[in-house]
Image 1 (cartoon, rainbow, N blue to C red):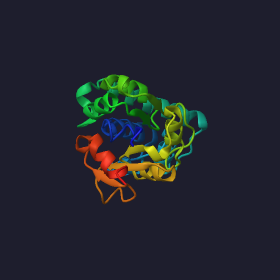
Image 2 (image 1 turned 90 degrees about the vertical axis):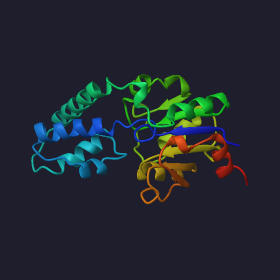
Image 3 (image 1 turned 120 degrees about the vertical axis):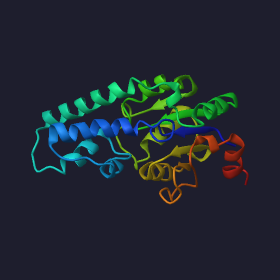
Image 4 (image 1 turned 45 degrees about the vertical axis):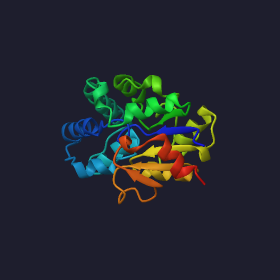
Length: 219
């Protein structure tokens, strides 16, 4: 039977991608002097803050010191947090709160597995912090997806095995991390984009506990 569910944050429980995009775009234009498009933004999915910065810096022929890079990441995050501060429970993606409440009521453990260092703030703003048993975020893990560290540590914290845990992911690297770690994975998005996922739905409103048990644990 299903023992636990682990959720990525951005693109699964909430969409702060537009806030990340706005902050990175401001940094690219004001500090680095390069353009940053929606296509560029797609390339950052699943990357850490430093990896994202390095991607943008690769578009420039200027050299920056480690101190300057650190300041850029801080400025980007400060601009992002100004936007995130305006989040409310209404910003949770469709089905998020209802599914988490249903899992909680059924005694199924829940956890967050995200590279975001701002995850605690965001789930607080969304009003779902009390519905998550563990939060494994960028303050805890050192390896980015597709390394499975974030989900393995989530399963360990919940005291469950990957085989009885389902991961929900919207990024190719996140799906790869789940599968590498031995987890079943539900993709959130388009089937053509998330071919490694066991199955794909547009959002969490399509998910019920009965569906999960039927898909993964009925054999």
